Image (cartoon, rainbow, N blue to C red; front, side):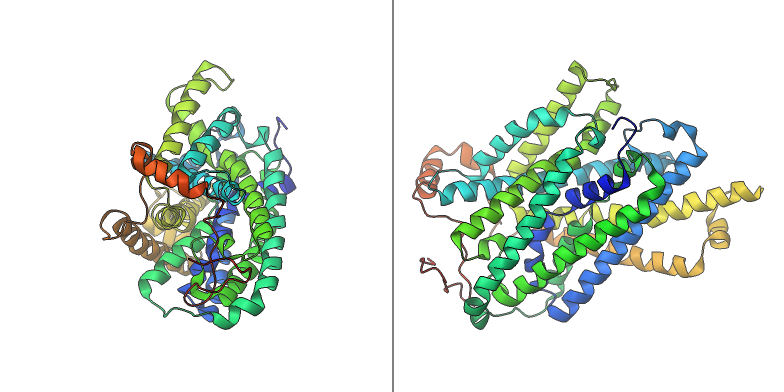
Length: 465
């Protein structure tokens, strides 16, 4: 696929790199929103990212039309888009936001892969901590991150998609088995603005594959087919996310933790789902990390062909991402932090802003206007209803970004009860590590979560405490 992949492979890429970690966190996000607001939020937060994804696709078409250099391979399409839209300063700022988000997204997917794999191993009586499994995940993925771009490993997107769809089917089957016993004991928390804001961040993360979308469109054989690609991708995401999130909320209530997998009562089913989600996120790391890896090569002037430069550059960057994930090995906290910090910029704010600028510049050029690009030219050429929609999206993005980031950072650094300990503190505390290994090797699967208002209802007869 040296000339690019077809639009239906792009659908699988978009779906594959977006679904996964957000999927298992959505039922917990619904707790703060409730059923009615939750349904409305799921619909709105699917439509808005779909709209902004199509804007990114159209932005790339404009760039290929106006600047011939983008007909060739571009290692950093999102920052290049920003630079052409608003100048060098925005290009640099977008580079920072894009690669920080990719950095955090890789951490989230790596944590989820290590979490699910360690839980499966513990369920079979094999002692494995999340931190030790994280290193194992890095070792296995290390050779594969050397592949140049998504068009060179498109097969992994098919595996990731199949594993996710199968996992959703098993989750829904688990819901059916648990509904009778868990629903009658469920309790639901009251609405709070802080929790609702963090829920929005989680939902944005679930639909926010935008840091990789310009790369996916760039690698398409016919980029003009971006609309059908994103339409099918987001329909599929909505059809998978909605029943998992709403039914999980309804059946288990506030006993749900940061991953719905823990609430499935049947041991065999839960382990099967864990394996499938692990397979998905395992391969998705390759897609998500790729823009940052390519950008690193660009910064250090590494050649396009594979060689020592690529090996050294990608090795250093990849392992920095893995060890950074080890500093805060808590899946839920990192999802909220990434989903509430730079991701709203890339999903909600930058796409319509860059589209507005690129389209206005194109119209000024087509009309042969002598006036320079300015706010007044945007007002003159830009559709007013669309401008109102864009302003609403900007307001939503900035609200989620500031509110959720503040509370996520507070929970990590200033809480009386920090969400988790760094892997480094466990690795270098020998006595505690021995105690932890004794715990996980006892044959009791630590990821099982009883249902009910007090988390004391087990449908399998296992002890909840």
